[in-house]
Structures are given as C-alpha cells and as structure tokens.
Amino acid sequence: MNKKVINCILAALVVGLCFACYVSIHSDIEFDEKKSAREKEVIARLMQIRDAEEQYKMTFGYYCGTIDSLIDYIKNGKTVDKVIKDGELTDDQLEAGMTEREAVRLGLIRRDTVWMTAAEKLNIPNPDSLKYVPVGRPADGSFFTVKAEYDTEHPIDTVYYGIIQLRKKDQFNMKSNEWENLVEFRARLDDYLDGMSEKKVRNLKADLKKLHKNHAELMFDNEDDTEGEWYGLRIGDLADPSNKMAGNWE
Image 1 (cartoon, rainbow, N blue to C red):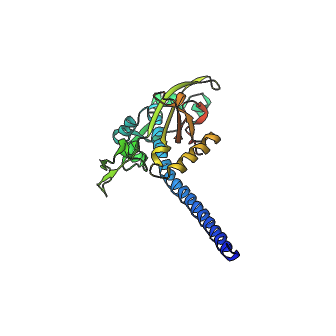
Image 2 (cartoon, one colour; image 1 turned 45 degrees about the vertical axis):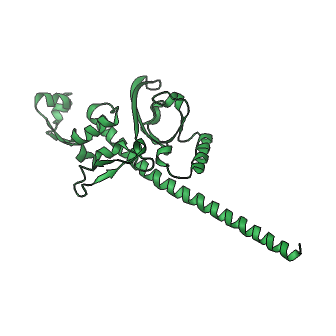
Image 3 (cartoon, rainbow, N blue to C red; image 1 turned 180 degrees about the vertical axis):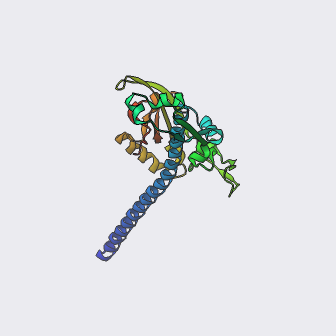
C-alpha cells in the first residue's frame, strides 16, 4: 500500500472521528436542553402544589395529606383573603395594660374576616392538573384526557402523564422539641424523561447517585417499602424536619 493511500485512509479516519465526536457532543447538548426544558415544567407544577399546601396549612393549621384532597380544597374550599380591623387602643388603654384581644372581646375593636375561594387566591386555572407530571410518561401506560373545566377560554380536553406522589407524616423535631407536620411531593425522573435516550438517562442516574442528588433509597423512602432507588424532583422531605418545603434542586 503506497503512502498516498495510507494518508487518505488516515485522513478519512480523522474525519470520521471528528464527525463522531461532533455527533456525540451535539447529542449531549440536545439531551441536556430537553432535560432542562422538561424539568422546568415539572418544577413549575411542584411549586403550584407547594403554594396550595402552604395555603391549606394557613387555613387548617396543617398540611394536606393526599393530592386528591388538596385538589378538592382548591376547587371547593375557601381561605382568608384579609382581616379588616376597625378601631385602635387608646393611650390610656395601653397604659392600663389592655391587649387587643381583650379590646376585641369587649367590642372596643372590631375585626372582620374577608374570605375568598382557594381557586381565586391561588390562581390555578385547572386544579385537576396538579395530580399529573406535565411531561414524559403517559399515566398508566397510555394517554388519557381530563376536562379542563376551569379553563373557560379553552374548554378542551387536556392530556396528562405520570402521577405526582404526595405523602405526609408527623415527626418529632429534636431541635425544637416539638412535633412537626411534614409533607413531601415528587415527580419520578423515569416519568418526566420517558422517551429520551435510555443510555443517557442511565448515565444521569449514575451521576446523581455519586453526588447523592435528586436521589433517595426506596427501602426507607418509598411508600410501599420497595427496595431499590428513586430519582427525580421533590419538594419537602419526610426524613428532614429542617427542609422547610425546599426543592431538592434548590
């Protein structure tokens, strides 16, 4: 084989390697962009649930334990919009040690509570959508539709996907020496990245496991005690009273 032929073969190999590297890099960039776009939608959904849970706690004093009950509260419940106070304590009353509570009881100060629907307060057009991961794997293995009854401008059926997991429990906080009502809700990575490169998803899970990020041991964390591992986006942490409804991406 002459030198010219060898040079041509080497040049072809270099071009092939460069093209393969380009395709690989482009593929990684495309995967990361799609992943980020999907995660953005999932995070927005989880934050809607967080807003609803916080409003629920303001109304009842504790978090809601099921997604269906939370949706029902949004659709049919009421919450405090504001409290209007009429009257003030005088200097003489303050010097005498009178409190506002006593003044209210005596009728010297009047407080009126203004109520509004939870749906208006939270501004969630279609509360039924909170139950579902907004992208990725179809729920129960197939697409289905739900009437968007709160969307008066576009009253059409909407397609939903995987199910949002929501759980709560009471746990004793050693720091505050009090019992705390904890709640968490989460979307599985396998649901919202469904349909994307399986190899890249496996590699992503391996990286998350090394970083111990967006990862949990199902033996201790899964509601049915299934052994294995969980990956995904989550707000709240049943095992950590100090979490304060933070997202695991924050």
